Length: 544
Image 1: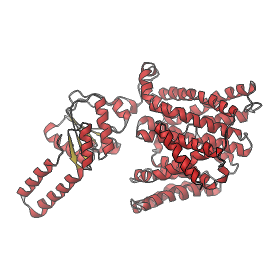
Image 2: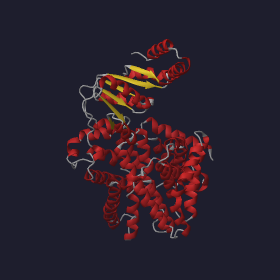
Image 3: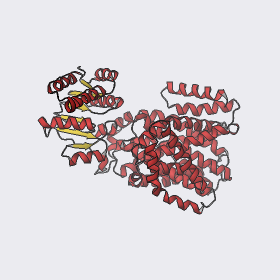
Image 4: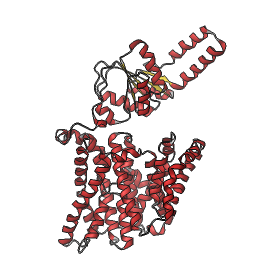
């Protein structure tokens, strides 16, 4: 591979990052720069292969994080379906009008051609939206889950089109894929055995590229669809999140190649750029339609706006649809360049808009709330917590232990917050007062009911970044009580103190002291020594 490709890509990514935009915009720009230097996509088959791997691993990663039940929710399947139809109905007459007034790129087009272009323009970018939501840490938020669900539905529509456009009927052996769920126990046993190192990554690549992409392609189906379905199959395994994290940088690196290939397809003419700019000016209509539909399904206007802004762009799948249409001779190849430019410009505007969506909501909150339909969606209503004195975030072993100790003296005045529903249900059966919520979700803090008599917040979250985020949100709520947190490293304790934590408890030091206490109690039976240990352990708490 040419050294210039790596150098120019890195420089463009750095320059774009410096001005606060996602690096992927720099990668798109790098593709156009490389094309002007005489480097073309056709001369770099390896880059094309890496780009294909990037999209395949992206869909596999999405599948790993997907709750398939979420696709059957009305706000997901109905919104995506109605929006697809509405977008096509909106774009066709506008494109027809542009052709009627003499725009050369659309002059004399048939209804079928206009339908294909409108279909390609109806999609939103999975790559862009997932990256923005991941960077915000909002993958578990309601708006993030709804946006991802809609994107996956769109991707399924695109994959179905690509499969049909092949003109080939899938092999009869494709029916054998229906037996894949029966192989789930065997796959899960292998998943258990691969450990946590490079074998885990290798397992992920085999599942995504062999069991998923290769197997589906072998029976006449789209390989990307295979990667997505295999990811969904693995999603319920306890190590699915770890697998997704371990493959993150593989996926990101290969996606760099995908964005480069867009620019390497060629430079647009001025008229192509003008048409692309016009198409970008129509993006607010896409956003407005998403906003209206999502509020019809009883989401809060804030949730609907956040999801809509993440979907307010054009899509790489639109490029793929245009590419297939051009290959089949259904559309001129110039439309691939036009959609690529529109995609790039839409990313350019979508990035700062997603950054400032909170300010936009605050400015137009009065008008936006009028769109809401009551009663609100069950997952989007205010979280009622009563009036506790103690709030514990994270009801794992440490949080549960802290809850039980406090309950001995302050029963009825404690509330636990836990993001896993099955854990919440367990605690409720055990008689603990616990509600579902994710301290790393901005939506959670937005919907959290105020507790005027709250005195102490315990952050039993073994994640330093999560603790810092929770502290920041507590400050925004003007919380003036005390905060205590658990930490894994001494430097984390200092950072938390600087952020406003009153006490920080070192998880590993406490575990070591607890282990020695256990040995002394069970083997040496020295009560006085145990008391001394307990006193020393309490002194390990970092004072403010």
